[in-house]
Image (cartoon, rainbow, N blue to C red):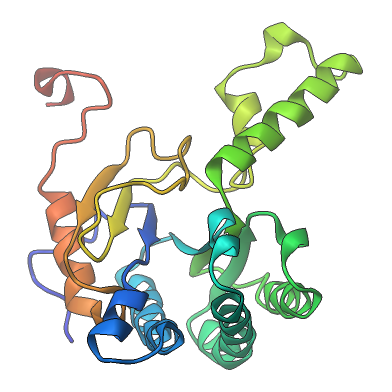
Length: 246
């Protein structure tokens, strides 16, 4: 699919985050197991990643597995972990071809050893790629991330590494999983749900939101372009007035 003429490549989100929702419902509609929906959703991941790279988006973060997802049925979690391993192995060539660096945020120590090993291997092999950073949020929860940051900062204050008066937004940013990423400009959530689900609560303070009824396994290049076009039609004021922006 060619790039729509009404997309302004000078006004792209520098950081796009996607809550990939609807795999289970998509599978249920087809009379299949939820695992089939997750597997089909990998096609959307590939399409979106390559489309974002083609557009020139610098940072793409995908909400792949939350801290709360560990509470899902054991068989579904096991299937997701196996799918993650196979996807990492299978997509290494795609990442290399598109000059994409893989990154990950979340409590990676809670992942199965085999998953963590494969993940870190792909991260290492793509670390010098420059075109785009693809971040997978795995075993990720924003509240857990913020609590972790508070503990680390408190420990540094206790040990006189930093002073309480030094604590500002910059210090907090440095202690988040996303310390090397810019704030999110646009959040896309699929499947018709309208909630954040504990995703990047600090980082989306001034993000634009785009909700679509499309279930994730059906989300493709055109749907991405629709979200980008919607984003570009908005006036981002960051607390200022329209007159100040103009």
